Image 1 (cartoon, rainbow, N blue to C red):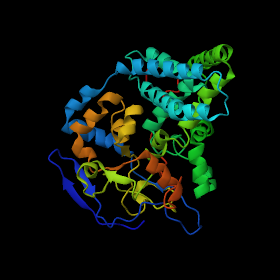
Image 2: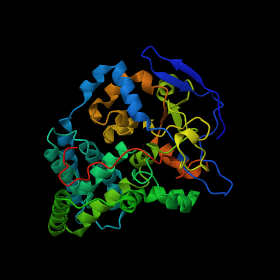
Image 3: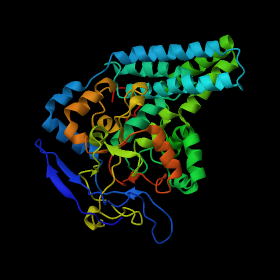
Image 4: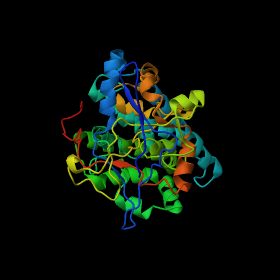
Length: 403
């Protein structure tokens, strides 16, 4: 990427914004001389810690938004009950039939995506004050998903927050092997169709978790529940749960959040929070602006790093109606800035610290994100920001149930 001019403004709160003009070069991994693409390698720390400190300095009242949301446990109970009801109603419906598939896609996939994100919310201890109660609720939310994963999700996800973009730690990052073999329209379509499997299997190839009592408890409870469902409602009911989970992470509107959150985008799917309200085009980049070209892997020290070029954002928010079904996970910059703020208070956080968010690139539509990701040759699995250093593994100690 070539360098681009920037204008710097300072808001009344002291927040510094570096605004890139309209002629900003496209944010895409370059092709080095060997003809192989690479990720966006950066030498700066992840942006959320810096922005969090700036927001707290400007708006100290945001810290009062932190803490559990009592509503979460009731929603989890309702959605689990809904899925069991659907499984009961479909108990005599053939698995290979349109009524079965459409129910699994429209109701089941939406419900299980909601439960995925309930477990995401619970992993931050945002349902109860007691860590143990949060673990138990996550195992309960896991039931209609059909496969035990809540115990493993938490340490991988907390490490994703602590080590955003760090190669070898952040399991949300696609591996080079994925990026190489899926670097085509068909490859990206395959990835979007089966992305739930990539997210389930990839972490084990990055690093493995120790098996704890919580993992064993998660497995035993899930197997017992699955067995009870098969015995009482038949194998088709369990098939409904698993099909719902697969479709929730496939070509489903709510599944767009997996790609929208951290892949580097530019073009028609990108707006800013301000332009969504004012229809005035404006683009911003992060305060940290040092990034290497893809042909230069960051093995050197910052002192010998390549010249600074505009750094693409590595987290994107989505402000749209599907947030109502997904625990406001679309407010992803806000979530990464303040992981201790529950889903019901993220809009309030955005309103309080609006000047920090209104110029950040965001998505208008998760469906458009998947469409753009698959068909646009400028976007692909290479379009992620990576760093070699920083972060650490979190939640790996067997006794660690409250970190």
